[in-house]
Amino acid sequence: MPSFPQFQAQTPLEYFGLLVADDDNFSLLEAAISIGQDDNPTLDTQAVLHQIDLLAQRLKVRVPADAGPRQRLRVLNQFFFNELGFAGNVNNYYDPANSMLATVLETRRGIPITLALLYIEFATQAGLVARGVSFPGHFLVKLKLSEGEVVIDPFTGQSLSRERLDELLQPYRRRQGLTGDLDVPLGVFLQAAQPRDVLARMLRNLKEIYRTSGDTARLLAVLNRLVVLLPQAWDERRDRGLAQAELGAFDAALHDLGAYLAHNPQAPDREAIGQRLLALRQPGAGPLH
Image (cartoon, rainbow, N blue to C red; front, side, top):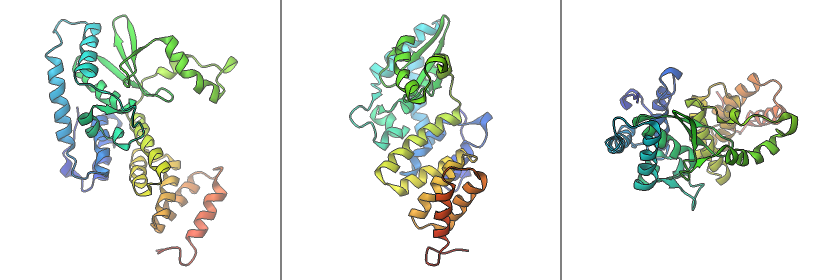
C-alpha cells in the first residue's frame, strides 16, 4: 500500500491533502485512517497500517499456496468475522468512533464502510480481488471468483443473493421513482466504487452525525477534509462557509459562500445564501479585510 512520510505535512489536513492529491496514487486506507487525526492529532497512521499488516500476515500463512479463490474467501471470512471478531456496532451505530479506523481496529466494531475497508485490505493481501460497492444505504464488498462475483455484507459477514440485494434496493427505488419503465438494473448499483468516492462517503457519514448533534467544530473539521478531497463540490464549500460563520470565522465564511454563489449562479438557495452574505458584511458581523 502506498504511504507518505507524515513529516512532509505541517498539519493533519495538509497530510490528508498529500494522500488524496493524485487519483493514480490515491492512498485510500491511509487517508481513511488519518481522519482520526482530527480528534487525535498524535495518531500515528503508519503504526495503524503496521497493525493491519501484522494481522494480514497471520491470515496469509493460513492460505495454501495452491488455494483457489473460493477457498481463500472461506479462510478470509473465518479469520475476519470469527477469529478476529469484526462485526457491526449494532448497539451504537451512529457513534463517530465507528468511522475511525484505528478505533474500529481496536474494538472490532464499526459501520459497513469502515469494516469494508479493512476487509478489502485483508482480502487483497490474501490474494483475492475485492472492491467496495457504494450501494444505497449500505456499503458492500464484491469479490471476484472463478465462477463469478460474490457480494458480502461487511456488517454481518453474510453473502447476499441477487434476490436479497433487490429486496434491499426496493426502498431506494421507490424513493427515487425508479420503478416501472424507469427501473434500473441491479448491476448499476453494484459497480466498484472509486477510492475518492469511498472516502467522500465516509466523510459525509461523519458530516451528518456532527450536523445532527450540533457539533459544529467537528463538523467544520470534516468539511475541511471534504473541500480538500472534492475541490469542485461547491455544496461542501457552502456548508463549510455556514459552519465557519456559526463559529465566528466571518472572513473565511464570506470567501466560501461567495465562491459557492460564483460557481452556482442558478443555485436554488442562491437568495438565502446571498442574504447570509449581506448579513456577514454588516458592521459588527466580524472582522473583514
